[in-house]
Amino acid sequence: MKRRNFLFLLASCFLAVLCFIFQSLHIASAADEVDVIVNKSNTIGELTLANAQKVFKGEKSTWPNGRRVTIFMLAPGQPERAVILHEIYKMSDAEYSKFFLEATFSGQVTAPPKEASSAAQIKQMVADNPGGIGYIRKSDIDDSVKIVLAFP
Image (cartoon, rainbow, N blue to C red; front, side):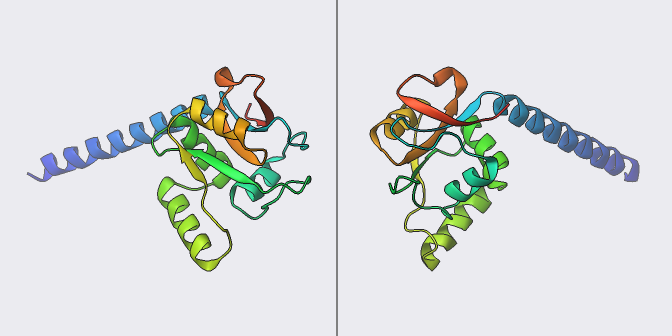
């Protein structure tokens, strides 16, 4: 009986490690394909990772041209969202939700990011909003938006 429990525990640990490795590989491969985008009329040329973190966390609420920043995020479960949460927010989805709930309640941000159901919707929302910022795969980029941060 003890041997069976030991083998079950060993197998469970092995599966957990495999899941972690798979998730890490998935995030890394998706990171090769995700770019942060803004409206074409935005005067910003490019963003550093540190500035992107400030914008996405609501610490910076206006662009240099005075326009209000509007953040667009894909809905939970999208691989591009996982990249942004990992690379920019350094948070899990649960931590992200808690962060914006607390920030909105305390007045640190006026509103949480707006959610979109697809990359096409984010691209359209950013293109239609002069203060918009979002992210999509490189393969979804066209001349309706401007890339300001590319993940290698």
